[in-house]
Length: 365
Image (cartoon, rainbow, N blue to C red; front, side):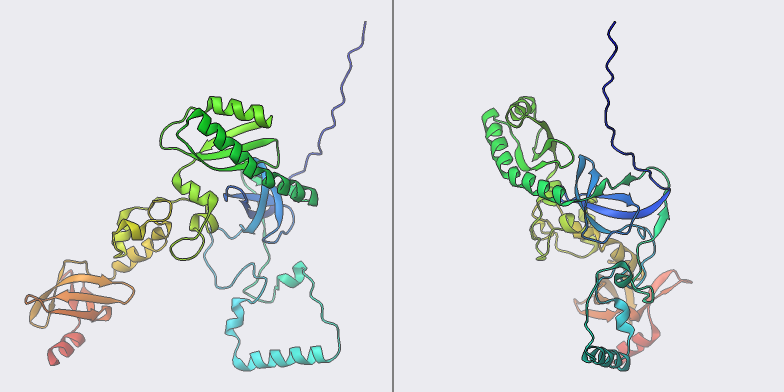
């Protein structure tokens, strides 16, 4: 009777995950999506890591420490690696003294060297600079798999070089199958043998035959993902009308809904060419200041309401939040512009009124 052969499988060492760690925001370099991951040591922004994404293990970059997410904003940069906002509070005399001290130190003949070490980057004595904090973990949180090694970086560059050829082949197959889809980009996953093709389409596409052809060419796992036009801009990037990178590509990957009401609230032109981005949808930045305008307009009378200025009742036609001006229209077509400080809300009468000081000034003119 033959004995069963037991195959010895070498298992990867299991990482003991502690109950407390540093929390980081990691940005995936291919899809520009961010994930919150934990690591047991201090990492600086710009550090390349291999971290989990929604598609699998892939190359990522540390964007910032996420321990302060959701906290109240405090003046100063908590991850400053250069000049700090705290320096603005220095007086002229202190600034001159510090410059003279630096000159004397260099003139003494001592060698000056800069070391990029944690204790020199984060100065505990400066209120505008603080190191990442180790926090107590609660619930399920993803962990960074490892720091990117030179082998990982070399492998990642090799895979990126193959993406253009993969897109060319995929486009040929799409044309051959006469599919109504637009290929956006292709990406080789670093953590496993898989290619992800991102595409846009107006209708549902049956790409089963396309996948079979791609598998026969590349001999690895193929994944096709349909994305929207806003996601296309997020993945590819580009320059917006303001001259900067797309917000969805460089600032955030959260595509919050934007409505035409936000443009109306900010007194913007409703011309679709002026308030739409290159993706054809409303500009993401319309939502940035919407809450500010809503909050500020509570301090003003509503448009269309009437105010008694002197002996004349005038109608409010426009409210300019930034200039803090209110435009009024009289019965005979006369228009005046008054400052926000000229109106006050009378709680007893439950209405907006002109202040006595401005009313007296108006009548004197």
